[in-house]
Length: 59
Image (cartoon, rainbow, N blue to C red; front, side, top):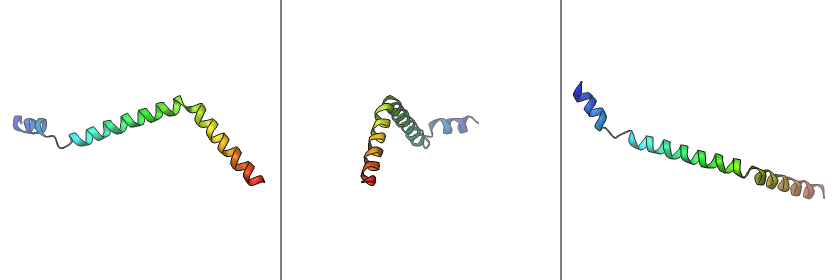
């Protein structure tokens, strides 16, 4: 049993996957924070684009 636990403790094959998951979580948190922080500017940009497209289609 001790040999099995020592093998598990020293096995680093899953380490890369854990690092990628942590990196993806960090990126998701940064993107979510940026979206929340710039929500007003994003909405205004989409509204302006929609208005421009609507005006160009109506002409």
